[in-house]
Length: 293
Ligand SMILES: [Fe+2]
Image (cartoon, rainbow, N blue to C red; front, side, top):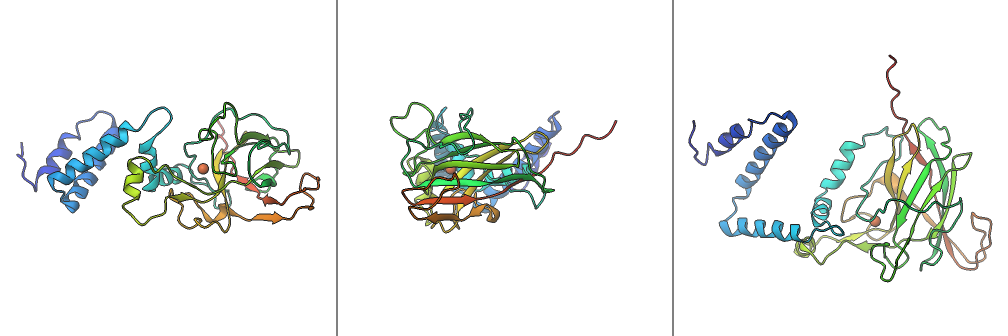
């Protein structure tokens, strides 16, 4: 037995935490002790700073319930959520990249006909999303599901919009025989991450932005292909270069082309107000074929 000194402590703790039958848990705990001790050795916290850190984590945990997850928000603003997403979705460079799902996805979006309006009663500028879903090899994917969710034109998701008791700003579309899709919605706007908790407290002690640039969330699913959870971001958004959760990848920035009243929409109708057209082709990667027996 080696008794502890400041110098030997990390080795003693790592040795104790090596006695774990589950090899993955052993690996995780070894790395955790190694990096956590290195962090503490670098920072050299005072007892008061250590207590402040414990208090921060305690209050962060107390904010979490079935509607709110302050720890995921902490992971988001530290870039950890995007790193975990990247590690788990390594794809061909030709495939559309993923980005984090975020906290606002609600399973079971209502099925919508091609071209149907998923924002029929919502405030905002009309917005048509058109394009195709195809494979890396260029083959159109017929019947691919596109599950969308987003803010309305005032920045509210379904969970945030007061007085809503039902579906708000989400819908499930499917690609047509040529792999094309046509979605009618309203343009989303930029919004702030929740700033009334411990993460807001921390962000307010920095000069960093707490905004997310305007975006539409998409979850794509098609048999035989890797699913894709991603966003489309509005090019030119004021916060496109400093998204608070690091979600912006260059291939996901798309022009929201604004057309004047009197123009013909992709649906064929003449619009009596200005509207946006977003044209984007999603590229999915095939799952590896099972090895022949
Ligand atoms: Fe979002």
